[in-house]
Image (tube, rainbow, N blue to C red; front, side, top):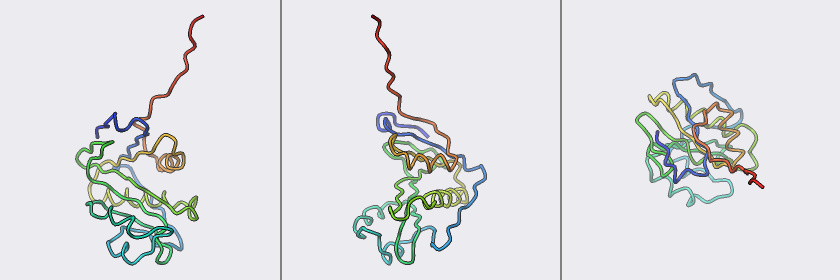
Length: 165
């Protein structure tokens, strides 16, 4: 992995070593797993139209979703290509673009999705996964840190240095 500094100035970038053990999170009452195109066609996006998501589906990424009956309430994706922020190495992937519907937040949805994606990547032979969050996105940072990712890059802090008299 190589961080593209000019494009990652306001990001905290984390890495997880997929050779470490990963415990799966199960969610009662909800369906969770790797999405297929049919999931996006047949399901309702809570508060959104299908058109908002169709532009994302042309890429070769993998999507993981959580459904409450036929409503997608949380989703995230695995990106296998380098982005403007991070250049991926071999056997590396990025976990990006996660979202949980506000009414379902603080129930472990995104944590469960991250665990599912990590297990999926590990089973496919990947060695590391990378994730990032903006410095001010405390909710995403909390989920990332809860999942034991290692911080590898963060924005420099502005330090006030008193001037001499």
